[in-house]
Length: 342
Image (tube, rainbow, N blue to C red; front, side):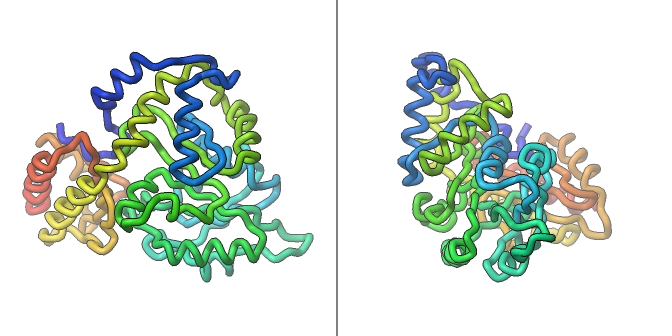
């Protein structure tokens, strides 16, 4: 099967499997796992931060960050289709006692002007804004990228407003690759950044939260509260080190393959796609005439291609290192054939 459902389906590379088998380990709750400690140190250095913490999932990393920056009864400004809003089980309410203030961005990209208008007034009878949360790249907008000048304007505005800013950077290395900007520069103005070692970087488990030493020290308590205190987790960190140091270099191949698929879709009359939104490794398109996305994906599966129906009429492909250029060329032909039958 050519699996284009998500970049979460990637399997660890042979080098990762060897590193996991040979990893030096200790008890991470005691701070004694040398491989975890090395990963945290290297991740902090890559992002130019004082410290980092390993968490099992990106959701946990985001929710720990929200808890760090907010108090109960506050609002978190986020994009209307963001992961923290739609795919994290309402945990900003359950764990941090906050509610989301959703703001629609253009192709998922928020600007300071849109954020500014959503900040709550500082009056005692209305809930205040506690945090601004951005997502780069933006998953459900199709992997779109927020450019550095837009981010800088947000960082400056948030600083003047006295508000912290967190980045859900699950695929931030994809954003950096697309923009040709070092990830340290692309994230410099955020108070905290979460990024995934899994997804396009290929590790089997794990994400990182980076920030100040003080913030990460507090994050350890919140991670423990969420059940994220792990023991000999160096077997996971060993794969994460390879993901961090090696797999970031090849993401451009995934972007090229996504463009191949997107252009194949754009050539067919039965589909509607915004090619300008295909900026990284995600392709989202709609079936015209209220076409059945689930049925379309079932038809693709019968021919050896796995895809995701993300709405009644919307289909998503995600490219990753487990699908080659040849796989994507084959998939593009199958997709075009099925679209012609609609």
